[in-house]
Amino acid sequence: MRGTGAGLAALGLPPGARVLLRLGNSVDFPLAFLGAIAVGLVPVPTSTALTGPEMTAMAQGLDPALVIWDGDAALPDHPAPVLTLERLRAMRELPPCAYDMGSPDRPGYIVFTSGSGGRPRAVVHAHRAVWARRMMWDGWYGLRPDDRMMHAGAFNWTYTLGTGLLDPWAIGATALVCAPGAPMGLLMRRHDATIFAAVPGVYRQLLDGGRVRDLPRLRHGLSAGEKLPEATRAAWNAATGTMIYEALGMSECSTYISGSPARPAPPGALGYPQDGRRIAVQDGILAIHRSDPGLMLGYLGPDGLDLPLQGEWFLTGDRVAQAEDGAVTYLGRDDDMMNAGGFRVSPLEVEASLAGHPQIDDIAVTDVEIRPDVRIIAAFYTAALPLDEDDLSAFAAERLARYKQPRLYRHMPSLPRGANGKLSRRSLRDQFRADDDNS
Image (cartoon, rainbow, N blue to C red; front, top):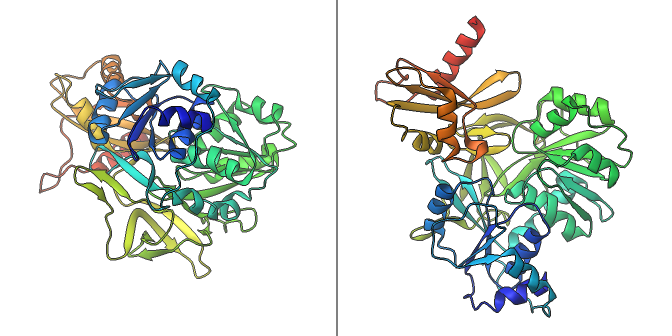
């Protein structure tokens, strides 16, 4: 890693320069990510599923000084030089770099999250964010130095980056990296995974495929990204004899509410505030105090960093209820953000991409429940005639990452709007549910 840092430093990039990572789940990712941080650069992980137009829009606001590319992921239309895997891997043989020891409050890395405004937002985290993650070791994971942590997600996501890589390495444990499409049940058994982390959908897939058996070393599972159905939790426990501990968080602060082996969540609740977190419930919305060391520095905008606060508090948009003993029950989002396999997706971003279809007059996107605890992204549109669904899917695939693409398209005579002309996605969901019940 420090050899990679030395190679990156030799490129002459200024301190704090942003390095865009277009890398998949391989050893190359952590070496590039940590090597950049070691020499005072700011790495920016991004999903390899993102298209060229999506990356170009993100790069315009980010203005990276370098792009590290694996040869497969789409590149942005941006003048930054590109560092290939061949050159990146050659850096490993260089003498180790010296660490750039600066303020813990300076920018350390950037992740992208979808904002309610419809465009992905660049979330800037300080170096201290890694130190703040120690609150999860006992408050969620029950993490020990002899653990072997396997995470099912991609490194560009805060959940995977922290839980699957940074936290086990920080305590001296082993991180097991899954390539896309890898047989996770087999790998858990073969490599003696003691903790498994994933979104609820992955647990369902493993259970449906009968791929969880003979896991004698597995101590428990971890779940975040979306609400874990109780039926999935019970089925996993029956199949493996282990519990799943759930957490609530967001890219802006990672997790802050969780159940753990030492303090399981009460039935129906999500968990408790982690020791060291400073949170409050304000008018039913979970809020994080600006002094929380895990809270982001702010969103990167044209005028610099913006940390939106109400007084001293950052409002998460998560609607919750808190019991007298401190247990927190999750009630849902306070906005229209959708949840696709654990990824937060803005309906405005999807609508903006599909509105360019030449035959669509009006469009609205929301997530709908197709069966208990399973939600998909659905697009409702108006047009002179119903359009071919394969054509719509192909149009979306050219403009949106797979996880953002609608799985269902429905032709409508008109879209529901209020007296002020504002679209009512709630009405769309209600109408879909009513039509589904009557079918």
